[in-house]
Image (cartoon, rainbow, N blue to C red; front, side, top):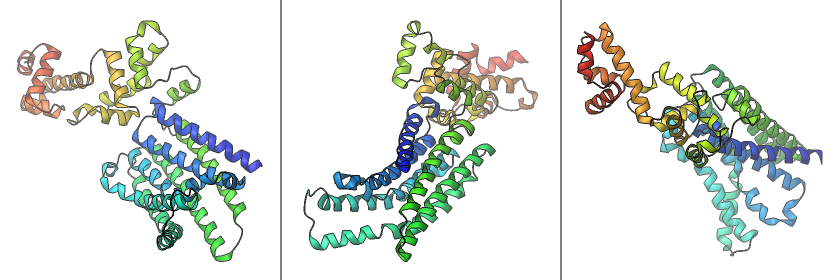
Length: 381
């Protein structure tokens, strides 16, 4: 009974935490999206154990559709996707990652198809085909014996690409907990298979460990190692000092500013994301990347591209392109005034500052300064 209470609490917390990560603009990034999926999957694995403990499968046989699918195939994939997006490794955009979903798809299709006959009685599978399906379903665990260690080693290889010491420490900690849980689960099943021991109690202990993993993700990931890039912003969220809204709501706030002074606090220069954006431009010169776009900035800030646009528009009164180009123009002006660049052509200076063409460079410079780059250089002599 005590175990069941713990598990139900963990399932609820997992669902709530995953929903917060997916919905809140504080955590909006591709990395956090996959972490939320991993938390949902872990919650589902715990739920399947609870269903077994309370014997819910007898009264609700349709739950076998959830239980028979091997969710352990997809959980490490989501963890892997979280890691490569969190460290911004180029492989995160590779279509080859889709191959990692094959074991889960194989398990899902074969088990759901089988349960359509055995559980739901939607149709009758021919005997020879049922034998094949039963054989395939029995292979699930043996595939996991290979797949799980592979994913553990493969995922760990990418943690070293994190450029932040604190982030690397958090990801390594998460990786350790995930694979300690999964490999312990595999060992328990092997003991049950080869020594015919009852490991149900061990499975309950592992499920408790899974609840600990969810708690660690919430506490260490969110509060200490910053799944969101601003701890103060998280504290404000938890204290309800700021209004959390989705992109549609944000747009409504801008259109109806005068009606909601509290909502306006989202769009001031004290906004933690705007401060972070200013820091990226002033200290890290992200504007020198000629391929910079809203999506790249949004990923670095941990928010959505739409929120980036709304933030810049509301605070500066300008759009994203002009905001970035203003930084580029300021960089050009500094280089023109710097004697180290006196032998550089104006176009070379413009390209060095992040502009993609002579036309864009001249148009942005004149819009910002009221004169052409050449006139500015002549006036500075």
